[in-house]
Image (cartoon, rainbow, N blue to C red; front, side):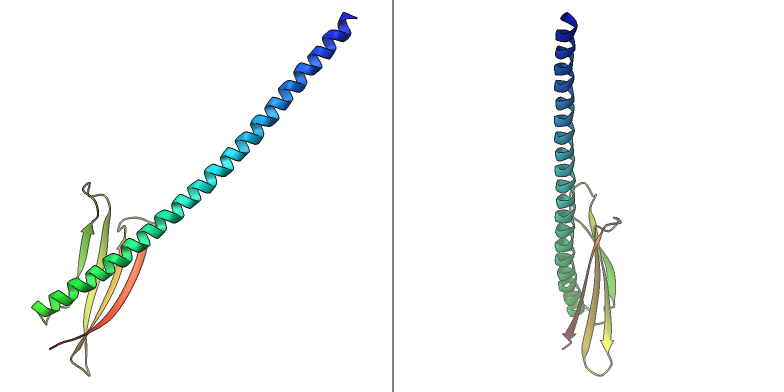
Amino acid sequence: MQNKQFTHRSHRRGSAIVMTIIALLITTAICMSLTKTLTLRHARHEQQFWKHQAELLSQSALDRAVQQLKQSPDYTGETWSVTFNSQLVETGVSVIKVENDPNQNIRIINIITHVPANDVHRSQSSLTAKVEMP
């Protein structure tokens, strides 16, 4: 009789352990799925942030080029580097090229910006504008 009780108790304990392991596996799978989702969202948000920074830097580079042309009509462009934080970690680079329109008194400004400059997953922004010279 004791053997039957012992066997019945050990089956109960075994069932409880199996149920606990299954519950832990399900919880782990849910946690891993949530972690993956959050990581992907963070990466997408970071990419959108850098894209916006690249667009802003392109616009600033255009403003810079227009000012340089006002000061010196012979300005042909430059590579302009900007640091975004005090640790000198994140930088953006805008390549400014100014060309003459042969038919008119107009300068064509082409800008290509990369932010962050030294990152494989950097964002790029391009901008072209025409500026009438006095």
